Length: 296
Ligand SMILES: Cc1cc2nc3c(=O)[nH]c(=O)nc-3n(C[C@H](O)[C@H](O)[C@H](O)COP(=O)(O)OP(=O)(O)OC[C@H]3O[C@@H](n4cnc5c(N)ncnc54)[C@H](O)[C@@H]3O)c2cc1C
Image (tube, rainbow, N blue to C red):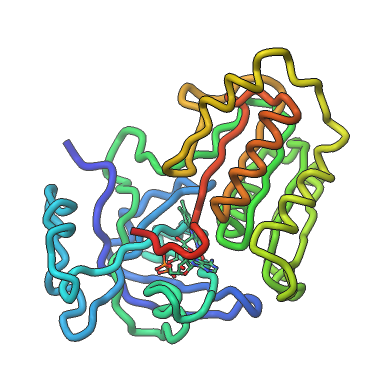
């Protein structure tokens, strides 16, 4: 069977500075005519070059993952998770919006100096696969009132989600960004989606302004916590990966999609489910990165 995901060897065709903290990298390649355009929060992987060998040792067959894991450090390409911001399969192009967070990680380090002609390998959804590609977590029940909240790493996914929402959708968007000027990121939100930007401006911890703003936004929707729920939710609190999305699809008339720094997202989820009594099946929460820890 044709695999749902495949490797796409690409080159950078353009790099555009969107705001102080963001660049938009356009990748090009004939193979991208087979990149599925699923929109929303479609996650993809960027395989980054290693010095000297570039991609010489990157396995791309069916069994690639275990072979990649066992490569020595100097041959193993770092792989990081990103969002497909835009797909123009007819032109063989994919855009990825990348946060510049310094030179502490291979992806951000690569982005700081990215230039047309640079080679990279994407792992993304294969249009030749007829079924579900996976990698999409935004699955609200039809007609639900939405709460979409995230930090700058989630901003590309939020922008892509907003662009595809039915224009009658209602709800709130809260985005925490590093600086005021990052609010220049273009969003195409339905009129019924109220967008709130909050900035750290160098003086706030990651996620602190996001948590405060979401608390404020949902304050009007408070419902009492039913007896017994608090204890049940305590037992279900994940202690490993900060990632839980409703398995069989969400139900009900409200739905939250939360993504960003893991500690902040855990706090937000706890606030909605434990303190405000939201059904946990109405809350998708995703730790996109963890402060002080590299993606492994
Ligand atoms: C599903 C999904 C979609 C994502 N989409 C995007 C996207 O479209 N655009 C995007 O920019 N990011 C996105 N991210 C986040 C991105 O994968 C992480 O930020 C990743 O850690 C960056 O890799 P790196 O090599 O730069 O840093 P790593 O090597 O992973 O980490 C090195 C150090 O940098 C810190 N760090 C990582 N990210 C940040 C940050 N943003 N700010 C400050 N410190 C950081 C880590 O805590 C660690 O201490 C997404 C993550 C997921 C799971």
